[in-house]
Image 1: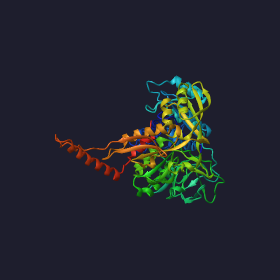
Image 2: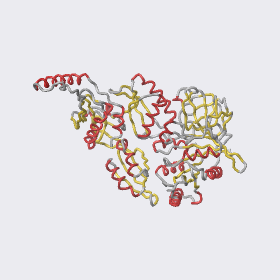
Image 3: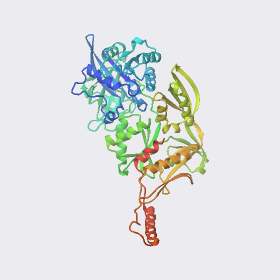
Image 4: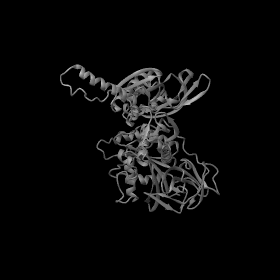
Length: 595
């Protein structure tokens, strides 16, 4: 055990985590020259195209230090806040963390959030100043920021460059010297923490786990503590660039188990693996349940694909435990699922992955939150969906969820952030300086207001520096109305939203203008209306395609032209009665990004 080290890499988005991981794999000869490529651990096409890490990736390296060989288990984590759940799970499987800070950008929002996350788990923090080869690097200023934040000595900070390989050897030495070996008891009953899983269509579910205590042999009869399902360990092994089988995994090892599990619901991330005949007393405290921020409906474009969508979501949840879903139905779109996401980027990525990995084309509805509706009969109903709202005459009051939001930013942006939060019906609770250039603002605000574009706006007005965290605090009465969108007098329930009365008129007008640009023209006029109950609050008209029927009339009596125009008008009217309007997918998406 003393030759094992488990550590992860944490940082703000785009501070060079994956590039630094590439250099480590190169120096330790884990990856041969033929296999080496940029961001070698990012194995999803999506990750390569966007240049971001979406999944945490675990890999084992062998490193020789002072004549002894050490096994280093490295987990490269994502930097974007929408994937912070991946980071929290990786941290639970590690004993140390490399905190990477870009020498040109300094400490940013996720740096702080991820650092606090690591400190909560008592991880050994190794600060690394990356991108030292850049001309615009500011080592002195950034060094001061790091010592302020972590309380370490300036000489403890390793200067490195993922591009040139500077300082990578020092990082590996420091990991061996500073990160403690795993602390479990090799003689105790087996306890393994599942921190990730994926579905392989040939081999079933592959679960990634860390052996906290005891050991596991190939062929052992094991059970999952929470689901109480029993299996035989058909294959176990460690995570190198591929899966490398082993006969035994001991305390401190990070590896995988394949036991022929076919149904994805039988594996839960955060569950404990133990032996059937010598079981451990209790499960390992896993991870906190994830808090979805955005709820939206996902519907198959072809209603026959409903069951395929269900199995695709089940398999995707294995690989992305922060996604939640439950069945729902809609008059316009048929049967689908109400899904919970961590943010708008997460929602976009999930849709993209459904399309690429499972060939599922889906339509998403307007995102919203759940409300408590009290009826005059004294009943309490939970409403997730605008179509589930009872008739206005039956409602006593509606309560919406409020959150306590913590925003950490630089003092320069306080004014803009306060204005943003006040516009979103927020109320300032406290303001607290963490350091000379870090301030924490606490707001009470409605959860519904942060669903749409709050996070994007917060990032743009603070130039990416503000970090945002929240927890739900209470339900407060709210003056909410249901805003419906009508196309040619027909309601499109997928575009309905529950919204505060004060914002309804302006939002309705913006929706109509946006839809006018996105819905293709037809052979007849299309009226787009926003309505609250029976009252129309906004209207736009998409003009029809028109053939120039009077082109053949040159000269002659006006009645000849009038006759042709009247005939055309009759045809258009008839067409309008039988024609139906298709709302394209990008129209649903654009409503989410109303600015």
